[in-house]
Image (cartoon, rainbow, N blue to C red):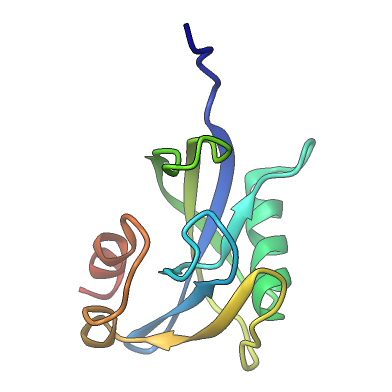
Length: 135
């Protein structure tokens, strides 16, 4: 019998500029090679909001303005059993000045419209959330 483990707390940040949202191309698993909102695991003792701000900065060099929790989704584990399921809280970000630079585990970083996202390999629910924000 396999032990069931609780999902790992994680966050992502949907940062809007005009008619586009910031996406990063994942440089490591989970979701290697897929485009997603900047984000990652919540560190022990860290609030969800603090984790969202930290992850945005670590992956893009941008400092978040106002952040508001938008929704929480359960992401299944990867096919590799070493990757757990994640309980991901998506934050909407009210702004961040500067040019995003791919850092940490982000291979690329940039702003994309819905039309541009339609042709990208996206992580799980990214297009659905992007449509909600930009639609």
